[in-house]
Image 1 (cartoon, protein in one colour):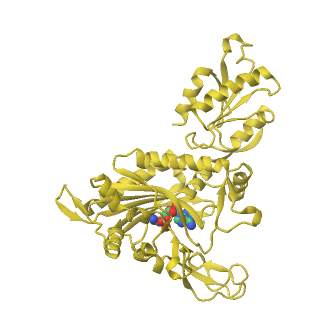
Image 2 (image 1 turned 30 degrees about the horizontal axis):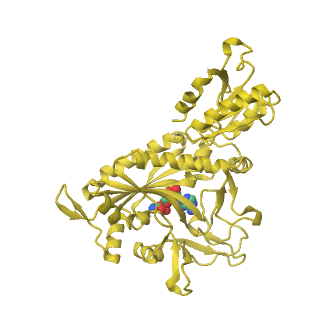
Image 3 (image 1 turned 180 degrees about the vertical axis):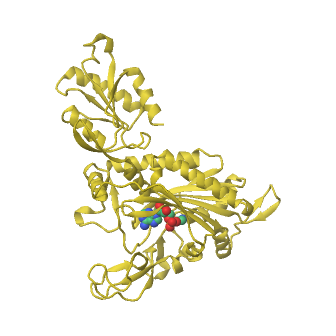
Length: 446
Ligand code: GAP
């Protein structure tokens, strides 16, 4: 077994502080003291998140002939969650301290008798339902109760028939969607790892029953390819087959993709064989026939389902942790984000060497506008001296810094209309002719 990579000391504090200082992720409702289990994505955080979601959509929906995209409502008829068993059983074991009244997840405690905070005695274990409920409409009675979905999956199952009727897809085929989900976690913790408001990217892939093992294996490999695409450190990922006694009630086989976070090896993604559980239950409860007429076999059956499920926030956390690097450059220690250029929130920063030379600024502005028109995630940066700009851009993971100097203007005639392009990881610079800049950056961010 290969040894686990070691994080720098206080890794989470360093990452959380960088994320806040540089505008990636803020505590939710911070000026009011926060709201546990919620975080807000700032300008760079949303850029990173959008890049990841767009790559996911391109790889798993637009890039395939057997996938259909969806965007279902967050609020669903309460019967959906009764049918799936969530109302009765989507629960975690809770214990409460009899002295300080703090609540804990029993399965996260080594000693289930003593409060880890104040040492008081813990009360009996009970099941705590994680569904967040709300009221819909003007009625105040129980008929108005609805739930914020705890997974995006059900929005796809309840639309199975709609998509089949509109598109007549052949098995195997899948639905994919990205959206928010809500869970009233007992102990939200570890930054954006365990949230109460989270986002998921999920796929429900419908197969013939006898084809599930092949499809499961195909998706296991595809999930690995995704980790590579977005630059998640594969030395820190693990595939763990969940033991039969630990499987969710709907699953016959699940693999967790786990990641070595600074706080331990824990779940990043899940891949589950959900059998025909959901479609059959919804068919029964709604009295709408959700079977599928298979032209290839001439049979009518309820398809079985393979579900690759990706948390967006955990993706960001694993990408940030994989990218975080400390090294020495120019005799100084530097901390920077070594994002793959395709996920980096900013692809390049454009600067005039000196901001008090109008001829440099004018030329730099022209180049900046031309680049931005082709590659929107480009920024103008003329703050401080050039060394400071490089440090700042390194820290937010900008792979390239483009600098316009006097040679660009022809001080050295051989270098007329060339710019320097500095590489974030090595600090080395190359000179590129202006007409080649766009294609150079476009190639790197593919
Ligand atoms: N539809 C299946 C499903 O929801 P899950 O394992 O409960 O399965 C799927 O959740 C993924 O959603 C997880 O692998 C994780 O990436 C993410 N996730 C789940 N709960 C989360 C939470 N409280 N905070 C952040 N992400 C979470």
